[in-house]
Amino acid sequence: MGSFLSFGETSRRIAEADSVVVIGLGRFGRSLALELMESGTEVLGIDSDGDVVQELNGQLTQVVRADVTKDEVLRQLAVRDFDRAVIAISGDLKASILAASMLLQEGGPAIWAKAIDEQHGRILEQLGVHHVVYPEHDMGRRVAHLVRGAAKDYLEVDEGFAIVKVSPPEELDGIPLGQTRLRERHGVTIAARKPVGGVWKPADAETILRQDDTVLAFGPTKRVESFAQLR
Image (tube, rainbow, N blue to C red; front, top):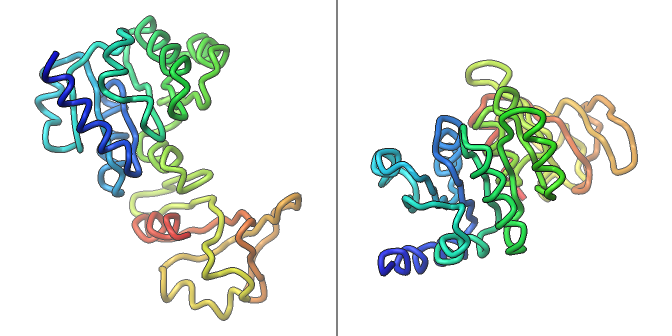
């Protein structure tokens, strides 16, 4: 119990930063957690398998072996203090549902939950889970971007090349695209723009963006990911 208390103090420090707790570190959860770490997000990883925890030790901000179906465990690990939680439990429907239910009762983080199938997804939605994802359609890299809140949607169309749907950063507000040197400075191209309440239109050099617009930007994956983080 003492070790859990010390874990809890560390968890609270992580939760004060831009942070996500990932519950379940199977293939999907691991991919998501490592991608979040790579992009600068603090991650608390939780899994019931000691071997998995040992393997990821040092790769995540903090990784803990714990049974998340026990309410006191979630409290000791300060999960409610995190910005976002991802329930990525594989193969245990009961554990997934219990974890979601307890997190919702705590009234803490925004919850993303992996659904094993459509029936599982419906149950999670009925519980009130904020975002249900299906790993066969939503790969860890894409979901990591959505969980971070950096992008409204993200698609890697080929190795090393991606498209992101995002709000434009402040530096582009009110300036015709042709004068922004966007491709030179950030390595991306704005393909289309959608104003609030409007419709999508192709972007050109005369297009003027506003911060509450939504745009489609494409380019090399790393440059697109960096652009999505601009505010």
